[in-house]
Length: 268
Length: 252
Image (cartoon, rainbow over all chains, first blue to last red):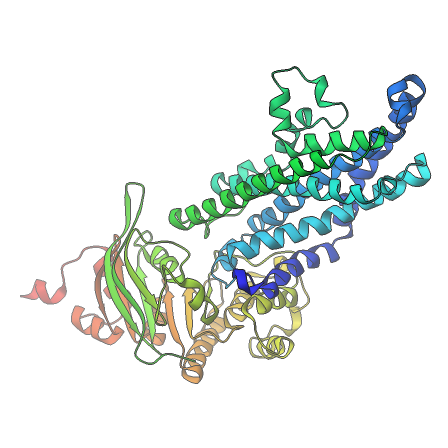
C-alpha cells in the first residue's frame, strides 16, 4: 500500500489499538451483537405474524428479517467508523496520533477496517440466530448477499466519516449524531417497503441514496424476480461517490483542525 | 541519527486564531544537541509555538524547518524522528501501559519492540504497572508512561510540554537527569515549555522568553540572570512578566 502513501503497518497498529479494547471488555463485544440480535428476534416474530395475514409477505418468507439484518449491516458499518474515531476523542489521544507518523488516510483506513470487524461481530450472530429461530438463512441469498452486504457497509462508512468530520469540527457535543444521523436515511432507504410506496416527489431523493438500490435489489431477488445487476451497478456508483465525499470531508476538516489548533485540545 | 548544526529554524512565524494574534512574527533557531526552553506566562504563545514545531498547527505565515525539512510541507518526513510529551494529552485510558507502548511502537516502526519496551520499563521503572490500564495510573505514573512513549522511537528531537508537571520533587529531579543523560548519549535536541525555573536553569542551554506572542528576550540562563542583575531565572521571569524596568536600565 506504500504506493499510495499508506503504511499497512501503521493501519494494523491502529486496528490493534481497537482490538485491545475489545479484547479487554467482553461487555462491549456483547453489546455489539446484542441489538442486532434483539432487533432480528422482534422482526422475526412480526414477520411470522404478517406471513399468515399478508399475501405479500407470505410470498417472500424472510423478506423482513433479511431487511432487518441488512439494515443492521449499514447501521453497524456507520457506527464502526464513528466509534473508532470517538474512542480517540474520548481518550484525548488525537494529539499523540497527530504528531506520530500516522497519516490521516491511514487513520481513515483503520477506522474502515475496524468497522468491518465490528459489523461482522455485531451482525453475524443475528444472522445465524435467524436460522434455528425462523428457519430463515440470509446466506440463502448466495453471492448477491456479498454485494448487498458490501454496498451497505460502504454506505455506512460514508455516513460514519461524515459524522466523524462533524464531531471533529463541532466537538463531542455532536457525538450523538453517530447513532441518530443514519436514521434520517431510513425512511428513504426502502428497507421494509418498495420505493414506489413513497410520494412521487420523494422518490428521486430516495433513488439518490445507495441503500434504496440495495433493498430494492434484495426484494427483487427474494420475490423471485431475479438478481438486478442494474441496481447493483447504480448502488456501487453512488457508494463510490458518497465514500469519496465522506473521505474528502473528513480530510478537509482534519486539515482545518490543524489550522484552528483543534487537534491538541479535543476530548472529554 | 542526530543532526549537527541547527535542528530547528523558525523564520517570521505568526499565528492568528480569528482576530487573536497568538504568535507574532517570531524567529529563532535551536542548535542541534542543545536543550532550549520556551518560557512565558499563561497565554504567552508557548504551546502554540510548540504545536507549530510539531506540525500540529499550521502557521498563518512564516517558515519552520525541523531536522532539515520544511515542517509545513513535508512534516511526515520528520515525524518518525521526533516525539513529544504533554500532560494535557492522554494515552488511551482503557489500554494497558504495555498495549499503549506496543501500538505507538508499531506506529513509529520501532525495531525489536518488545525489547525496547522492556528496556524503557526498566529505565523508567514502569515494571510494576506495565500491565495496568493507563487510566488507572496516578498522575506521576502517567507522566512516566508518557515519557516512555516519547522515547520509544529514540527521537532526535524531543518536544516537551511541562515534562515534570505533577511529579514529586524527587521523581521530577530524576526525570530531568534522565533527559540530560538521554541528550548526552544520543545527541538529541530537546525543546521544552516549562513554568519551573529551577528545571530551566538546570537543563537548558538556551532560553526563549515569550510574552504576548513575541520573543522578548533570549540567551543562556546565566546570561539572562546576569543581564537582569538577578540571582535566579524566577526573578528574571517575574521582571519580564510584570513589566518591571530592566534593573541595569533603572540604575542608569
